[in-house]
Picture 1 (spheres, rainbow, N blue to C red):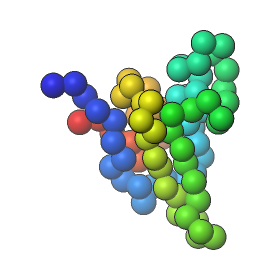
Picture 2: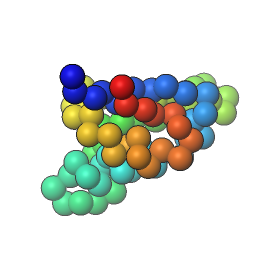
Picture 3: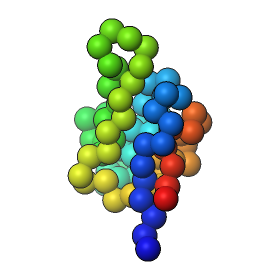
Length: 77
């Protein structure tokens, strides 16, 4: 069975968007960081210091975002 990336500990998310930047770099042909070219979206919930992480349908579940998420928000299963 193939491993899948999933959001495991959303309460740990700091909103740093490193996962999204890593995704954009490794999935783009240009190898550039671009939040408009990522398959992960991180957004602030209302005006609170809480964040939502969404894996878009284009996600290939390569797991690189998990490797670079220093807060343990993402995992593979």
